[in-house]
Amino acid sequence: MNIVYLNGVFLPAQDAHISVFDRGFLFGDSVYEVIPFYQGQGFQLTHHLQRLRHSLRAVRIHSELDWADILQELVEQNGGGNLSVYLQVSRGDVGERSHSFDEAMAPTVFACCQPIRDIYSLDISEVEPIKAIVTADMRGHRCDIKSTCLQPNIMELQQARAQGAGEALQMRDGLLTEGTSSNLYVVRQNVIYTPKLGSEILGGVTRQLVLELADEHGIQLQETDLDYEQLLDADEVWISSSTRAVVPVVEVDGELIGEGTPGPLWQQMYQLFVEYHQVLMTGRKDG
Image 1: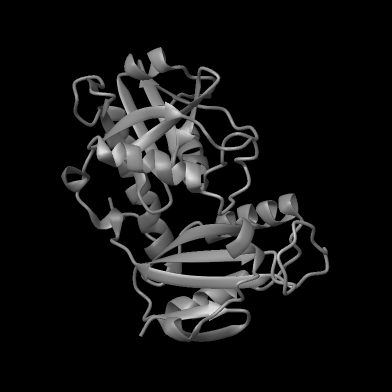
Image 2: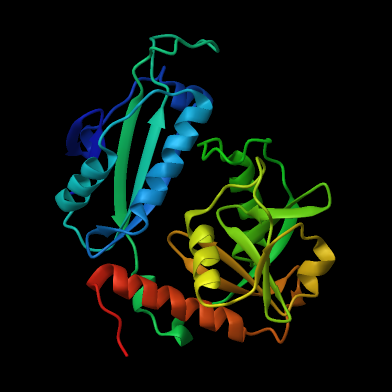
């Protein structure tokens, strides 16, 4: 049975209901997180919850629950294992449609989960590279807030899929920002480059892990502006997200990246992710 969490109660999904006047439904006035659980354990859970709190503060939604306990209980009620947990907090409902809001409103808190593949159990040869396209970044200017207002992302990803691609890389004012649900990396001469953070880029939890692993293992990485020519001239291109780890991009807008195959630096980073995950889940490192 698919069990969800809604406002303090765990219940079957078909029994969960919200008001038609909930501001998350009417206005997208809500924030969210997607957190992978492997073997019943949250992966980078603390960092995801830190980002959730940042988003809540930024939009002035006042909700502070024991998020970790709620999500752990939800995972257990759904059988544990490998699950992707979706957590959404909306501003709530006052029984009418109004643009203005009262900061004392009671938020609507909802969470659900679905099975995911344990990407860290894959052999490196099983990781499928993707193609990407570049699109105009049609989002607003507070992309550091993980908001449910995702229509631009949805339409850009749909455009990518219509062209046989797995991601759309967004560009604003001549500079690349990120994918529709991922962060971006360009490799040239064994140096990783990634767009620097600002209000127009979401601070990805997996992006931060890439930075930490690169620093720990002596891999050069620079946060900087990137343009279209630098993307196409790259030796390697990757994307990252919480449920996909790091994924090689071998073609952009029909142009091969490097030799059109996953590159050696991506292979090293992927292996570092696998080792990090192994230590986190088991407390040991092979070899």
